[in-house]
View 1 (cartoon, rainbow, N blue to C red):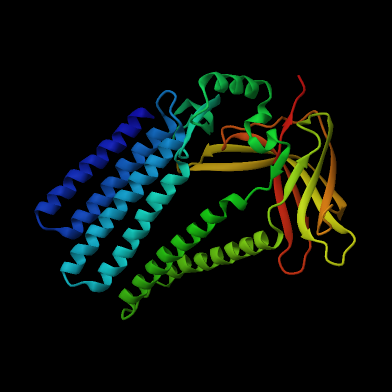
View 2 (cartoon, rainbow, N blue to C red; view 1 turned 180 degrees about the vertical axis):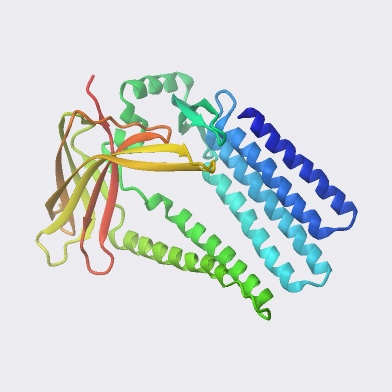
Length: 382
């Protein structure tokens, strides 16, 4: 794999040198074409190397942050330079379009890198490591070490961190703050801003590509109607984003209070879900509850692309009735599930190759239905 990565990076550098030759010859179109092609090869090789062959003790999240900043940032800067050159040549329409794309790529580089960067005022602490088997496009095999990190306040002394690491080993569910407190926040609400941002960026790029392609070829006999797939997907994203936003505004954030902490294999799991569904004139409400055990696996397909698959190992459904909460405004649901002892326990890392247990709840409502998911800690008694 190392040889293949070095070859990819070297080939990208070679194409970059050719682009500089095109620049000196005054071939602007060829320059940008070769430059983007060269940056693609070099960036891809460098990115794969940083993610799959990290330095000892290096957090992959920081590598991803750096990769996003470098690749999207450099592409955005090149587009902005190209828009200036087009403006000088009198191509006002092309200059405006390319400058919009350049600004979008620069924004993605900035905000995308911040998502994976270490939070300000925090420091990373290694929780654990796990060796994974990997395979290349040509059938090469190897191993890489997957690491899990937790961010703590930078003022926490090393002695306290050592105590925390010992507790994480003995009680792995304490690695998640909400699990340690006995309250699980539903999955999804934290990524609402990311979903909105992605929807906006996709629609700007998708509609821009479609408009540019159709306007450029409108007078010809071969109009590229296929480019409408980009804005069509953008419309679908808007629909999903709006429904997700409405659901969050209508029901708020549901919380699962763990009566059993953690849940043990071969024992009964109990918890109380505070749904956020308004009582109004109802004295009780029917809910569909499902507890599932899922195995998530990472692999490479025949084309060498990284894929993630999920397989349901076990599951059980129940129909329960919610009761009015203490506030008298929303419903609470008490859940009881017997967890078989022949299933694997929870694994927290690596994210793309682990086993997890998820509790799903849903109910029919007027307008947007209620639905929430919670990942719960399930472990084997020692």
